[in-house]
Image (spheres, rainbow, N blue to C red):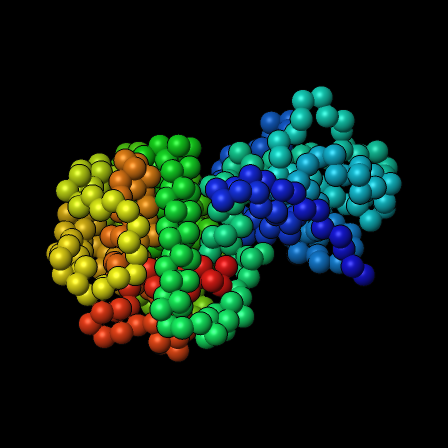
Length: 396
């Protein structure tokens, strides 16, 4: 059987964009929201023990979910919609297939005076809204790597089409894609700062980046449950933080050094040694060169030498993270975390700094694509964060 999914249009950074209900389902499945504040429309605390089995056929979206509602264990199905009105619009109140639904998950908040959500037998179902609980706006969820198998999946055909262009045209296409990703990262950082404040935005972003793609969501659970101020007061140990991720941690395919416990240990030691590190980062920003414009993709080696990127990397390591994060992971933390946050905080021109920075944890497939496209050139167009971001932008 086929299932028709709802689609809504939202205003994004680059104009209107469409989102399928499938994305909201993935947010629920991944637990990609602040579950510590999840309450139903009656104000009861809802804890998700299991989101349920994702049902891609007809019937409720998730089967056999396990919840604690005000401490009481409840088992049944979960239905996901953009808005509460979709329950009646789709005829679920007349269908016995939805008689076991125990929770109606919405993106939009429940409207004042909305009618009850009823099963065929007249049982009223609680509603919860995810929109106030999201860690960033919906456009970021639609484009960010933190949602596994995003609805905007990889597109190798876009990379293949680059072979039809000259090498310089390939570089130009990648420059444009990188610039777009930089602007989006700054935009999403600005939204996070607005929503959480500077200190918590830094705290959440650092943990998210340290989680890699596989463990960003449980790392954000940790950040939500233990804001930086609470961490300073209670000084939680690694095991206490690790328990917050429950069974969501993923270690399959990861090297031991990248296991979430190890990354949490790095952060705890960093945080204990520098409990006010976001202020240090903000002070650090004032010394960075203010490079106006977006002259991306020139002579990488020459830019790095003239701006002393190697020296700035050492300063980030010693002054901001106190040498607790190193190697390629430090570069990723700087590119995906520090530089977008700093640019959003004070509207600084750090785009070129970001483009020419060292590539960090670039996937092997991305590096291989750059080699095949022949856009890199020794002592001129060397591997940098911007070129890898350009490939990632094409795949989005």
